[in-house]
Every structure is written in C-alpha cells, then in structure tokens.
Image (cartoon, rainbow, N blue to C red; front, side, top):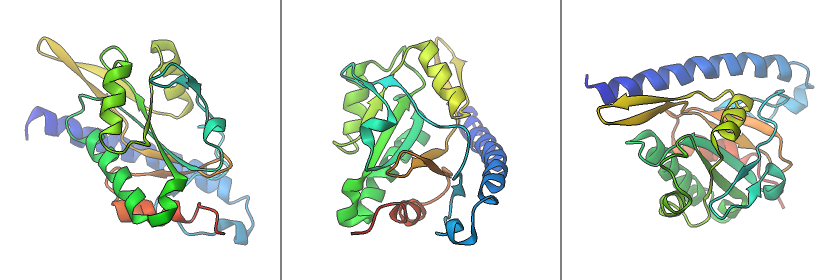
Length: 209
C-alpha cells in the first residue's frame, strides 16, 4: 500500500471514528424528540438537535462574507477540502453534482458549499475555477488561518498539513454536513456512501409543494 493510499485509508477511518462520536451525540438529542419527529429515516447520521455546527462566517471567492442565513430556503451540503486533494475532494464534489442530477427538478433546492482547508495555496481564482468545474452553482469559501480554525472547531473537523518532499499535502476529515432549509444541522454523511444514499436523505429535507 503506497503512502497516499495509506493516508486516504487512515482519513476515512478517522472520519468513521469521528462520525461514531457524532452519532452518539445525535442519538442523545434525538431521544428527546417524539416518535413522529424521528421520521424520516436517514441513511446518514441524524444530527437533529446537535449543539455544534450551528453556523459559519467565511468569505466567498468574491470577498463577500457568507453565513447559513444567505442560503435559507435551500438544503445546504458543507464539505471541507482543498484543491490539490488527489481523490477524496474531487469525488465529494462529483458526487454532489450527481446528487443534484438524481434529485431532478428538486436539485435547484440543494446548495453545495466547499470550504478550503488550504487557504495558502487555494486562492480565490483557483477555488472558483475548481468548484464551478463540477457545477456552476457550487460555492467556495476561503477564510484566513484563524477563521478556518474556528470554523473547523465548530464543526469538529480535522485538518493538518503533511510535508511531502519540497511541498505538502493536507490530511482532513471526509464527512459532509447537511442543513435543512431553515438552517438547522440535520445530517452528516460518510464519504463511502453513494450518491443515491445522499439523494435519498437530502430529498427528505426538501419541502414538498
């Protein structure tokens, strides 16, 4: 097993451990809900009632500070990654584009947001070109080191620079967070889940006419 694959496997395992911890907190929160409120049935971890992941406040690629309130009325999917990520990040973004397709007309109610954990190399132009190559509606956010650290802590996200010869790569969490149209954190989805799994859960958060 090469070094890159080893790091990828370790990251997925780390995310699984993190998700297990998050899931335990979610179960505690959900136990306070009525039986009717426990529906629908999700394939990801139900985080309804979690006391973290409440909001973010980071500039987009045009310098405008964005928060969850800017996307009220849409289901928001949030992912932390970086442009030079060899496989996890492009897979996450390609899957998000496929989820939109699977949702059909309801795809317009999904907003994908990509937060870079490598603001030193991921300039605004680089980020804009990267995320929009997957879907023109995708939004990228880029904060300074302090803002990124605070946001990652709010979402219990891990990231770390790892030297690779004369350069470096980034190890980071691989889960995706999903907010309902009211801006409440509802789900965390695993990287090893399929686009169909994602679409199944997200469809249940989209208001029906």
